[in-house]
Each structure stands twice: as structure tokens, then as C-alpha cells.
Length: 305
Ligand SMILES: [Zn+2]
Image 1 (cartoon, helix red, strand yellow):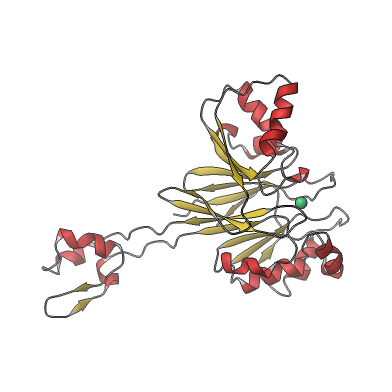
Image 2 (image 1 turned 90 degrees about the vertical axis):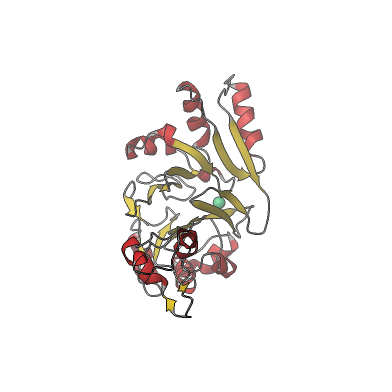
């Protein structure tokens, strides 16, 4: 069963908005919680989500504009108050550690749990995380400062054997099982081919999620996010402000929809709306003219990938 989900904790852009919080998301995938960006107020949003703060072991920061990380100091301080012991890993552009250390120095806060900083500096795509189930890569974006998106990809699992059918083919020995689990057909001595789908059960397709933080329209990213299941792409302005958006390193609803369409994404979530717009549903009305499966997220709702 698929139990990977995304919770949007906030999707507002940089100016404060009465109704919405700045950017932050919580992704649960393969038994890990990943906090992606951490705008002001993220901590209270996590409390509202009922996810335990201490379950988060990885935080990924796309760039060092305040609306994407100003909530971090409070979370790290709370971990200290809660006497966190386990390691926290933070992926971020260079400079974040110095910013945090100045705060901790002058507030005389001693952080006693281990924080591992992994600095992102490359302008090319990099793999930044891998375990037995999951890989995470950066998505180099084009904003006004150094910025990355992130793509989370489940690994392909070995197929389960259909033992009942396997037993019908006497030539198959235990030593052949691994190849069959990997998806290979079985070739008998007489040259007859037993197709793999007779010998195995269908395994679920590995899931993928891409987070495209602040960026101008940048079709170069399409090659990184081909055929993904769920795409979040910023959409700060409506399309009549395309050139204004482009100059300010942001995208429009149509730009985001084009990226979704050209990358053959299954579902698109829009966000990072400028607070000049009272009715954010108009972003959807524009986007669906290009890409039908577009949604305006509801804060704290679980979106299963
Ligand atoms: Zn920004």
C-alpha cells in the first residue's frame, strides 16, 4: 500500500499574509520525515499537523531567502529544550551554519545534539541522499540567489516470487530466484522462454516527488523531473505578469503548468502565491488551460503521492 504523503505547511511568498504561512512542507516517504524549507511559523504548523517534531531527522533548505528558512532557529532551539539526542541532518546552501551560530552565540544557546550540515554548492544536479529505499537529488533552479529544488525517488524493489508457478517449472533452482526477482525471464534448456510475469507478482511502481522552489521559468529542469508522480512548482504571479516574474526570478501559473506538461508529470501542486492575490483559485483556472491535473493546496491536508 502506498503510504507516502506530502503535507503543505505553508505556501505563501515573502510578504506576510493573514491567512497563509510562508513556504514549508513535510514529506513522509519510506519511513522518514523530510522537512522541506522552513519559513517563519513552521514549528506551530508542524504542531497543528499532529506529526511529532522529533520524528524529523532531515531538513532541506532550498535557498537563503528568509521566507524559506526563518522558522529554523526556533525548531533547532525547541529540539534543545526537548533534549534531543539524535542527529539532525540539514542540507542547505553555504552560509546557513554561520547565520545560526551567530544567533546561538548571542542567545547563549548551547546545541548539544549533533547537527550535520551538508552544503549544497553545485550548479549541476547532485545526489545528496541514498539509503536502501530512497534517493534524493538536487534540482538546480534559476532564482535571484543560489537555489535548489529536490527530487525524491523511491528505489525499484525486487519482485515477489510466485512460488506456486515457479514449482511448475522443475528446472528453476533457488540460485535462479534473484534473477527472477530482478525481472528477468527464465530460459529453459530447450530454449523455451518462461516470461517473468508468470513467475512473479506485479510490484508497485516506485514513487517520486519533485519540489521546485523559487525559480523563473526554467525548462532545463524538465530532464530531471520526467514522468514524476507529483510536482510542486512555484507560481508567484498570474501569467500577465510573466516578464515581471521572470525578472524577479519567479514563475507564473502558466509557466508551472508548462513544466508539468512537458515533464509528463501526473499531478501538479501550485504555491508561493504573491499576497497581491486575494482569490488564489485563479491560479488554477489559468494553469488548467495547459495542465489539467493541477491543484491549489489546502494547508495541512495530506496529499498521497
Ligand atoms: Zn526566494
